[in-house]
Image (tube, rainbow, N blue to C red; front, side, top):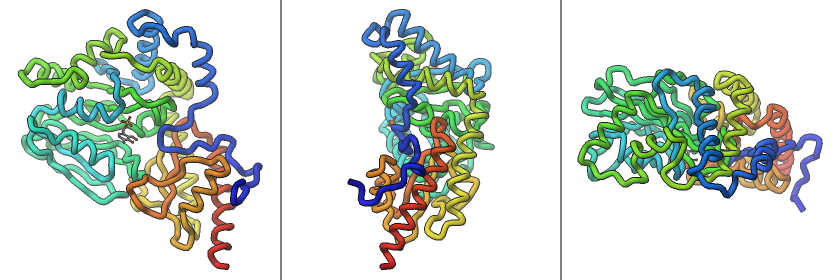
Length: 376
Ligand SMILES: Cc1ncc(COP(=O)(O)O)c(C=O)c1O
């Protein structure tokens, strides 16, 4: 029994609003079932290799990749890619924007015995810092979307950086849902469990010709690179539509269905428009609400895909998310380590406007109940 029943006519039809793993659409599960014959078959044979190939070309089309850019794929999710970055892309020293948990984790991975200590621009959660060029830095790294706070940083090359310095963007939760221009990055990496609505465990990296040249240069040097973190090896396998080691074939099928849909919707520009619309519904509702306010103060840094809203101290956000969960509306809790009286709502590409509108009505309903309870 829920402690408060939200009326069915205002409940979202699908209650999954988590920041990842995120809602998987029913049509993706249908795709999985329709293609079940290739589940449990060799990833070195044509049926799975063709699937990998379709995902890679689908992504290149979706992002409108310029001539010479390549799509690499590997196992281990974005967390593994942080170590790939340290082993295969940073030559001597990296610089980072760190404004939340995930940006900070990337810094930790880039702090190694074979690299100089990273240059770090650290700012408070909810804000976004900016780079000054630093002599001797050959990789600038930052998250496009900091999933722990809902702050989004633009993808733009650092002006005045050393010649050949690479722009490396953690797009784990941004990719597919936030507009960007591929000419502005050298590496744009992400995992499938956010806008691509699949399971976790893989990483994808869009690589510019300059990034590929760097990978080749470091691979040819005397640096010891563990095979799992060798981007050269991942790239060679990717060109053959394979992975270094066994991938999750089911995840690739879920991904294929979502990439297909996102291309049918019109590619990145259309998808980014949809997430902007849905997140703006939440931001403007919160701005005029007596109990809610957007956590990210600067409107231009408010994420179109991860909406974080502070809740007035008169109401316990934990009680709110608990009632939502009891009613089947899940994963609206804030990032665990942020420790704020807050809710966090994903507006990834697969989440409908109608469900965002219903979520707003549901939260209003619960907030009215909790406020009345508090003032008794
Ligand atoms: C911005 C960002 N980077 C990296 C990660 C880590 O991704 P994974 O769980 O695929 O290793 C996440 C996970 O939520 C994330 O949001």
